Amino acid sequence: GEWIESTLPPPAGYHSLVWHSMITSGINHEYIHLLALVYDDPYLAQDDALLYYRSSDGGETWEINGVVIDGLGANYYPGISSLKYSWAQPVGNTIAFTFGFDEFDGLVFKSIDNGDTWQKIVVYDSPFDPMNVPSDIETYGCGDGTSAIALDSQGKAHVAFGRMLRSRASNTWYYSPLGSEGIIYWNESMPPLDSAVVSSYTLENLSAAGNLVGYITPDTA
Image 1 (cartoon, rainbow, N blue to C red):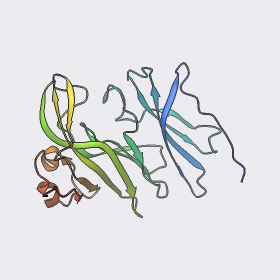
Image 2: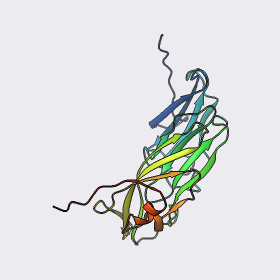
Image 3: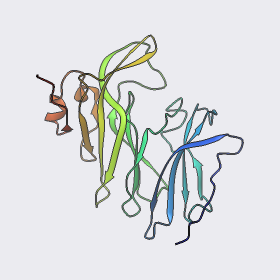
Image 4: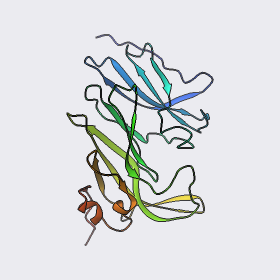
């Protein structure tokens, strides 16, 4: 059919709305759900803020327009990094996306009413608060900043993310790619993961808990 073009501007007085991620839902995919960053401008006390939009008419109007979802605002993060979020394919009125999975928490934000309200679910519970980060941190296991999510036929969330070892010295983050292999799996019937399970030195804890779905065999040549 014919394509309809519409424009979604940033909030009034701001310059950029970037790093978009979008899905559609509804019987005829009539709903558009969009996440995007207000970039290079402090917004609602954050350096960069993640905004949620929803349209039911193909983007001509937005009945939810530039909302900061509770749990992602200035009380939780000084700023939001680009593309630390990933949508699941919707199941009925259930929609969900992952967020984080870096040196801080790995989260799922899930709505069972097509984006009207949201539940925050902790997948990986970081020992460190992004609002109060120590200047020096010993190496610990966490995420690498990438994640993927799927909803099964019952709307249950299943998540995969990459394992990483990180440390911090003199207010600078460092990562350790060597020895940090591992693809981690989690679903809503499992308890939250922590840095002890992810571990800085072994994959055995993840394997024993049923959370390890892939890793690289060390080179023994």
